[in-house]
Image (cartoon, rainbow, N blue to C red; front, top):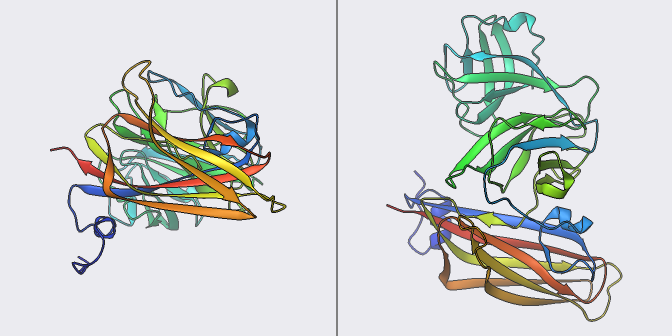
Length: 340
């Protein structure tokens, strides 16, 4: 365990794991193009296309697809582990040596939602891997898949939904193997998807198209997006899960505009709404203004922190701008506290 002096801020102690029952998060969003006619618009990457965020009131079937054929993976094998460790996958019934598995392919643990990358294929029944995020251990009964990039594809082959939500506002995670511009159904139904990111990529190291999560395969029902060449979602919206209290510790807002327009401004407002209540009203929590000659930044720390209850959507929006082509990004620093 890391020793942290008493004069270190509480937020950092939480980040270092020194405060059981607490976790912290920085939630980042960007809208690279805000025109006067777009506002009000949420701070998320689809906002650059004047797309609003309209999350559903009930869990929905979700489809994932890219705007580029370069974003495609290929499942080599799947099964149920009969053993393993923190760095090995064992399956007594597998044929790993003849499955076409190569170093660097993704090893997905669909039971724990953790992953790793192939280091070696030791024999027909054993793969050694390195952890992709520090926890892809396998034990008897875990479901697995091994995935490579589709032939000649250069973008992303696998994404991970990291902050999906079930009907009871519990966080749920899953992997999705991309199939280019052809839709792929998620294994789970989702109420929200706050975050997705790339797990397996080709030579470009990033998704080559917009990777969209949609209800009923409809662009009118977009709920999450990994913007092309970004590798992860850029959406400032955050849903507080069940069993957690949320405290806003700080925010960081930036405004940029090419050409250094004198006096260009943007107003940003954060709204909250109880996501578990249909037609729940939105409540304004804070409002700030940014002015720019080239770029400007505004940082605010709260003491005490702003309290947000469980099952609540936090929605930062650009309320208005004075010029077209404004580039706005926004980061929330929050702490989650387990309700005991």
